[in-house]
Length: 111
Image (cartoon, rainbow, N blue to C red; front, side, top):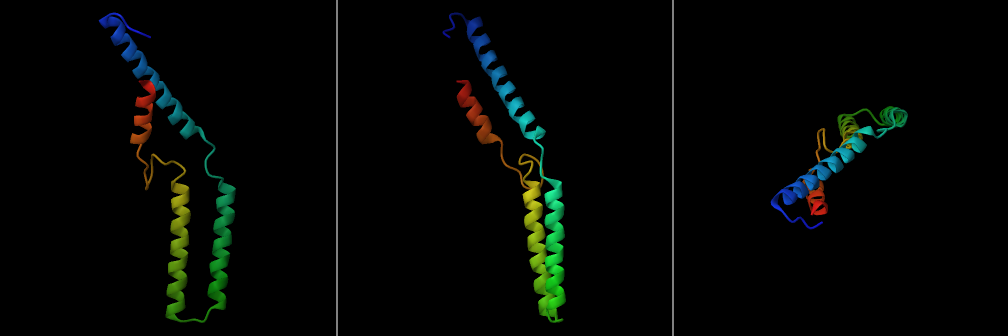
């Protein structure tokens, strides 16, 4: 498209801006409409981890060092599971991914 007048240039820039907004809305809609994290899997995973650490606690000698080690190991595993679930929505939550690269890419595509 080669705009000839100022009005045509304005309309072309406005059309590119609107198409970029539509593409951004499409990606946000796609991001929010995904099925999400499989909760039955998460339930089974948490149950399995609880049973694992309970068995460690039952079979380990009873002293402060072992209890501290088991506590910190279970805390690190729980933190890892929390971060995995939190990254289900990368633009919201505890850890957020910047949307600036996506916006830059949309701007480049709109040119």
